[in-house]
Image (cartoon, rainbow, N blue to C red; front, top):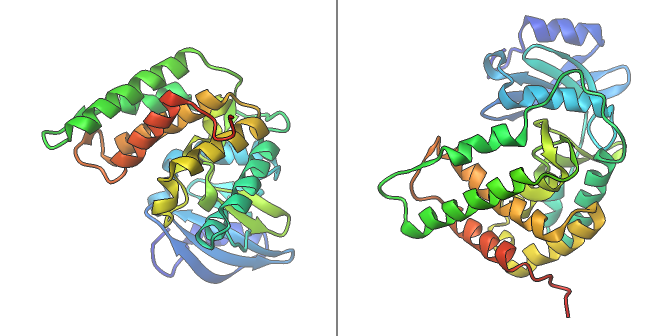
Length: 289
């Protein structure tokens, strides 16, 4: 597989199997190149991983296969380093938010989450655990230029994460990266994609969505928006509101640990972590009289 115009032999074999032809390259990320292809039943997405390395998305395809289209893009076929998926034309829920429709997008995201968790999932092998994921946060080291306030906030987030992991509720397979830009409109409605696949507390599933979508920097920092989402999603998804907010704060810190490579200095999302911690520790619903 290459980052250029050639899809490689393995992809060509898979496309012939499904009588598909390449139409256009539609996206290139640090992890993969996505092509729009077309076969007898219509368009599909061919995802080619750079160097054939699926990294943290390999377990996500096990999850997609188990869901078989329930709330997610259907996995049509896969081989090492590549996958053929149901085509999602768009827009994304992130596009809706960026167009001023945050409330509408929040409801759709909740609906997708409920679909994902509306039935059992028969997985061929165990998924990674949230405990394994959060080991990166617990091992995080601060560099000399890390602000003292951020050091303190990371310590608070570590304590919150340990408490949540020590008292799990409703442990279940999770999409693991459910947020606005990972949900797009397709022929069957709003569907999630780019699953990571992890097992853990159901309350974690919506944690990452509080800090999304990309390009809505002011919005995601609004405390009233965070409280409003916590009210909506805790009731609609059937999870404890306080734990949901704590997972949101813990996930913000975990994302910092991942993006910093294990050595944290200054970080552009330090203020978001601080806001999430303050709200999660106060835990006062917006709708409370």
